[in-house]
Length: 103
Image (cartoon, rainbow, N blue to C red; front, side):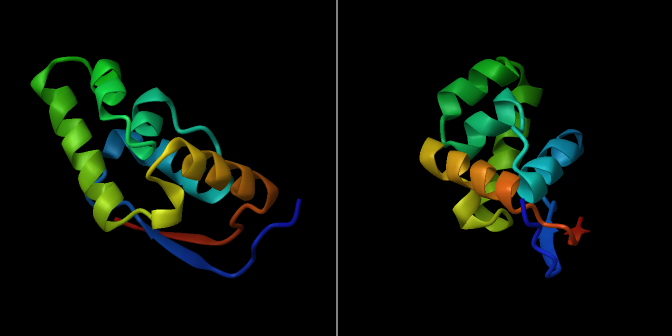
């Protein structure tokens, strides 16, 4: 495993705070982000809704996650199951060593 030492910046703006740790681990190291965030990353919104539950808070979280994906998350890291699996595999093999996080 060879880490990428060039600094990279990711933004967590628009992402609900309770998902920051999972998103950081996913983007930097390829860690599985958990069922709700992964369903959103893979563009499986019906599954995401099932993970979030039918409450208004669940819908608000999904809406904010989708906003973050569209505006802030690298396009290579989301969109379908294959892209998410590829990102996880690549980051596990070559994690980002120096990451700056913008809020």
